Length: 172
Ligand SMILES: Cc1cc2nc3c(=O)[nH]c(=O)nc-3n(C[C@H](O)[C@H](O)[C@H](O)COP(=O)(O)O)c2cc1C
Image 1: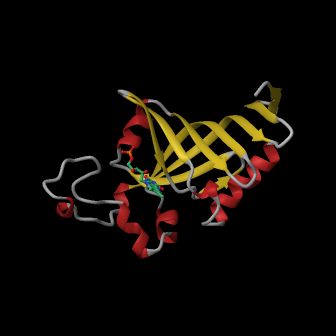
Image 2 (image 1 turned 120 degrees about the horizontal axis):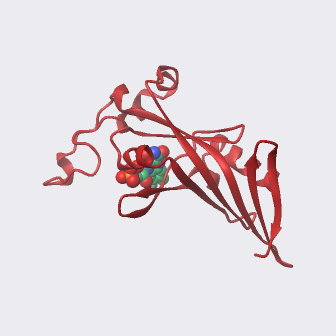
């Protein structure tokens, strides 16, 4: 089941229409859990990559506690993917910045910074600021996979240790 889940995550990076393109990223905020939609930018070697504004609340949350979760529901495969991760924050990644199309850079560097109250929604000015570009590298440590089969429901919980991935079926 992990192979199918990993394949779906890889597809999320390559295929804009794949459900894994837009996982939900959950972090631990000062007032409790926080979940939001993100774009899956990379998936390789048990590491997922997400880009964000360095001034966003999620970055402060991850600096305080690097634990996070990614959630994807694949309706065609009837599969839920729940991933636990430890997140590394990479700033000043000029190589990745140059690979982002000019028009797409506009979400990194708006004024005022995310979450600041505005008098009117139009008072916000988007901006392109390399200094505000953050790459989140989510090192996957655990996977909880559920398949809603026509015959039965199957669930597997897997953990990544020094010897690779171990674990197996659990009651759904
Ligand atoms: C379809 C969609 C894709 C999004 N992709 C991203 C993304 O890749 N990175 C990001 O930081 N925010 C993304 N957002 C915005 C977040 O959901 C969220 O509103 C924003 O990052 C602020 O979250 P925070 O205050 O918890 O940091 C996306 C929103 C939508 C609806």
